[in-house]
Length: 147
Length: 147
View 1 (cartoon, rainbow over the protein chains, first blue to last red):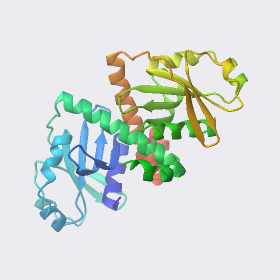
View 2 (cartoon, helix red, strand yellow):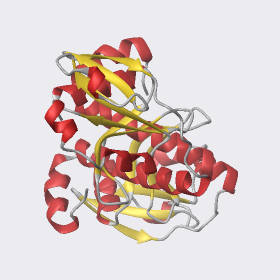
View 3 (cartoon, each protein chain N blue to C red):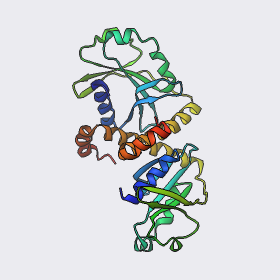
């Protein structure tokens, strides 16, 4: 996890949200942070290491399909005016991060939310169990290719 | 986590299930393992360290309210004939465990399943994020009393 991602994840935890890093989405892409809130909303937080990283990525709007709100996370050196204003903005300062601009709300359809919740829950539960039993993780990774 | 729980958790991972240890349930009790399967079923696995542990626990049937199937997990020294037959049985042998008796199916009501899935997902996601950032965990535990 990059420092910007880690700081954004801490911000999530402070809000009571549950951030899963490098989450595989149904379209095969990975979200830097895929976040579930106690209200049942899904957020995607896409970290950008610098202007070039943002300018060469034309696919970030596709994350909207898997969340209710989309955010970029950048550090203090990133020029925020380069980012579109219809995306939320999180700015990291070392290990801390601040929610600088709220993201527009584009609610998921109920059937998709339901299937995403099942996917998120299995992913988080399996990764947690593997994190707590590294020996099992080693033994299983080869056999099962757990995400 | 006890060795029996750990072995049962590995068995879950081998089945592709997602076991969360010491999971706080809506009634205030904790499940030794609260497990989500890819089919969307919830299991509770209650570990018993010995006959006395089982005989002094009169509340284990209450776990049925939070799962579709209930199992006991014991080690090889436990006399299996002492356990009720309408509960599943997992027997641990060192770090491995075997599913010795399937559990009866008593499906959760849809509304409860839905609320349990949201609860499970948040719990697993938060714990995973905290496990991956122990510094954040230390800082947050005091402030938030994260489960």
